[in-house]
Length: 246
Image 1: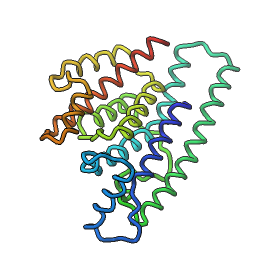
Image 2: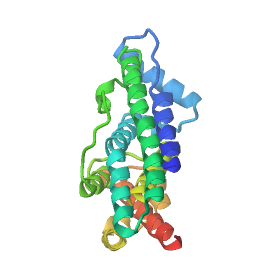
Image 3: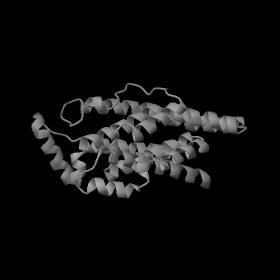
Image 4: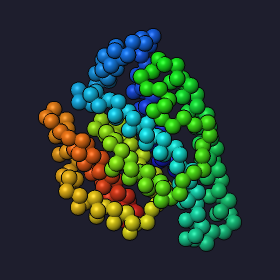
């Protein structure tokens, strides 16, 4: 739980950092130039700047998926522990205390996100809150299967753009930490990995697909889809390796 808290905080900080403050400039024609100039100063490469909108929407989307499912993941993990082990009252109280401390911090986080949403709605920022799911509370929603479906939808079907190294790495680490907390069935994950391995487009390594996209040569939407699919395949593989070591 400490790991997911750390990774979520990193993604939130990146969203804040790269939601460029346009100042008092309200001309939409100038916004792109302001953003490009500030991103160059932050050492983004030309190709990532071109896809800035898609990259940031992907970051907003993963933040939303994570935030909306984290409580259900905690509760699922607790029920799994109760089912798998005989837990005495002392151990159960300790586990529940840990969980309640985390839940309290998540409710505080909801307030932080509301404040942030109000700040972004000032129209001084490149992205307005409608690019993320604006919330006033933390919902206990979605089943375990739905969480996996949302993750697969993000990586396989939503045309997410994960070419920026820093944001992509953070999103991948956050996804893995969610799986490590949720602990989906190993057999199911192995089947998913096997299915992705046989997809013709993603037999290539991530780096080879990314190199083609970054080269400036023409590439198709399928290339970006192959990249995200390869990332999901590798996240699944890391999860399997972690579980085997444990």
